[in-house]
Image (tube, helix red, strand yellow):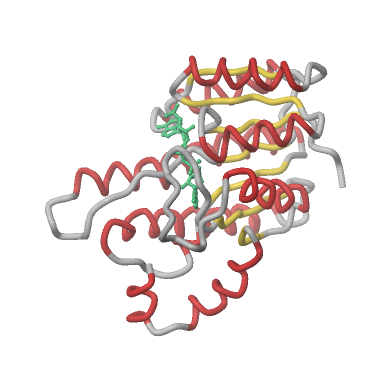
Length: 250
Ligand SMILES: NC(=O)c1ccc[n+]([C@@H]2O[C@H](COP(=O)([O-])OP(=O)(O)OC[C@H]3O[C@@H](n4cnc5c(N)ncnc54)[C@H](OP(=O)(O)O)[C@@H]3O)[C@@H](O)[C@H]2O)c1
């Protein structure tokens, strides 16, 4: 398997994206990091370069809901690093409201960030990969994509299911080419947007969760639920459980 030397990560100013940047730098990879908070990205770059002076880290401000900017920034990174080998569509998060309770604006914002902006990133990434006949597209979905979920999770889960289906469709379109596509389904991992919750016994630290994500990404399998324990067996059960049970435990 080709080593992916130059890796673009969106949503790299905090949480899982920031931690993935550290993990890949420790493996000697060069990084292109994007998010809205440029000051945070610059701090992440400084920390990475202090720990791993041999790698190159470039940062650019990007709001992924600005679709034109997604294409511009991805092309700029491609030229900064003289080619991108892997692009991780990670920027996302946020919650919504129960459908039909006056929360349309929040739900539309969630769908826009977690689906439409991810589509823009996939388009921009695959355009670059088609031109080079190489590359690895990684889409960060969620275990929330496995079943329809109630309350504040309904739109978020639907958007994450949407991008998982999108990634599979892109994979189908690119079968037989050197371009690879992977979907990662994280369980509960502590991050800036997902604060530690002592009542949630399934939640793992950022370090543990992201180490599992990075191992899964490096394997380049089509789909990975992470950390594999307990999420692979839970995913199996979630798919088959009666909806009432899924709703109660989500
Ligand atoms: N943590 C979990 O348990 C978990 C579980 C399943 C899936 N996920 C998924 O994993 C990904 C990362 O989540 P996280 O927990 O690390 O979230 P987080 O701690 O809230 O970090 C989100 C990152 O995305 C960036 N971002 C948000 N909106 C953006 C926008 N419009 N344009 C560009 N960047 C934007 C943020 O940077 P700026 O604010 O600087 O833009 C930040 O770097 C998300 O796709 C999330 O849905 C997380």
